[in-house]
Length: 172
Image 1 (cartoon, rainbow, N blue to C red):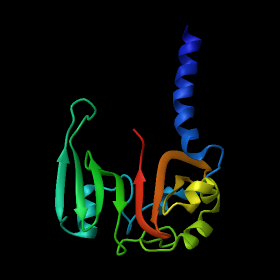
Image 2: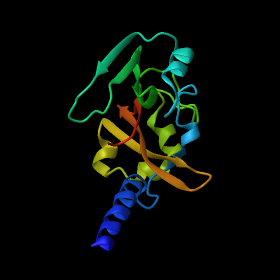
Image 3: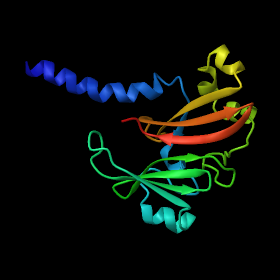
Image 4: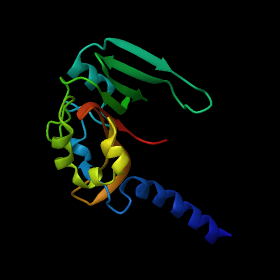
């Protein structure tokens, strides 16, 4: 009985790690570069406002069925940062003024440039996805120095061959 419990625990830890990387089929961005103007996962809410100034609007949400704490969304123009327990848990960038730290990728960049940066991830798109006017390219986030891939994804959303949104998120 104890052995079965151990297998369940081991599987719970292995499944999240494999869900993003899937044996390195996708490209990996180092977590230290998966940020917007220095603001990434774990950055304090205070640092967000120090870097970006006062937010344009704020959305506060709490669902007692799934949330342990109130979550906040700080909006800056068309982009936003998700904040939980005073720290950044994700972001969505939809305007050109905020590039991500990795290769200075920004909204408006052509898909041709992005697919050369992330060739493994681009190869994972089906032929139907590659010819669709709307495409989403997924990249894993990890610690590249230690060869560790986290269960964190960065998605690049394209519309008509141009990058329209960059999303960093952690699955529940």
